Length: 174
Image (cartoon, rainbow, N blue to C red; front, top):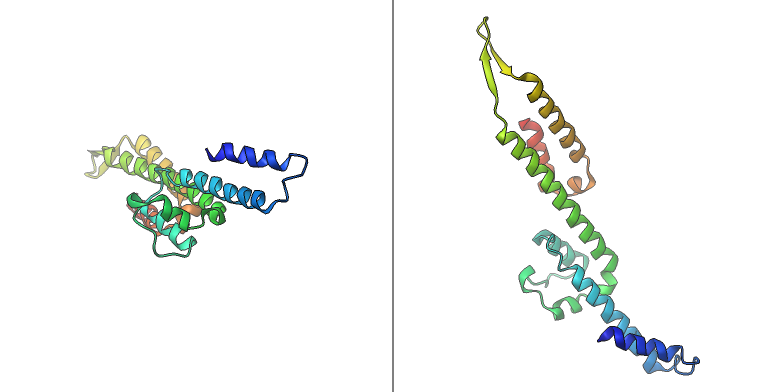
């Protein structure tokens, strides 16, 4: 139990300052801190929202091309990345992944709403087709356009070409 060992090491430090300057105690504490931070970041990287694009970003951040496939990652692979050095970047990556999932859900909901929308037309006396009921369709259209416009300027959409293309396609389609 690494956390229990850390308690013992910290206990040595507080033991009247007698042991705190010993190189073995300092080295042990540094290694345990590194290991516990690495374990926490490995746990964070198990987030199911991480997509292959996020693992590629992690490889770029870690300045390595030797990152294994997402389903083949081993503890030794992650330890080799020096995860504690990348802690802030990994946290940002997770936040981005969570935000991207929300964006994907919003885009899917808009697409679903419009693929399920039934448009009914009535022939007028002048021979033209008129949309029925126009208020309902126009309100749904307006809501979708407002949501798409908001997504269009979302920083996560702007940084992701796939999302940008989806938003632009929906905007054109509507």
